[in-house]
Length: 54
Image 1 (cartoon, rainbow, N blue to C red):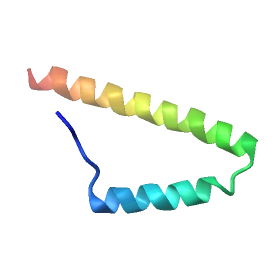
Image 2: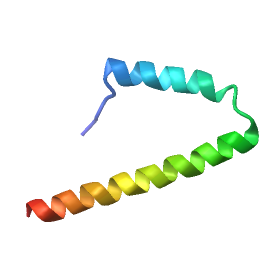
Image 3: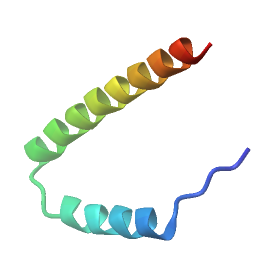
């Protein structure tokens, strides 16, 4: 199963990549940690939604 990004998501990703070029190394590290935290919260929310729907 191959899931592709929408055109809008591709655009947002490109903008984000361009902005990331301007970050200091410390700011980039902090952003990576925050993105991991947000991804974990999203995973927990999806898991909880799937558990409720069963």
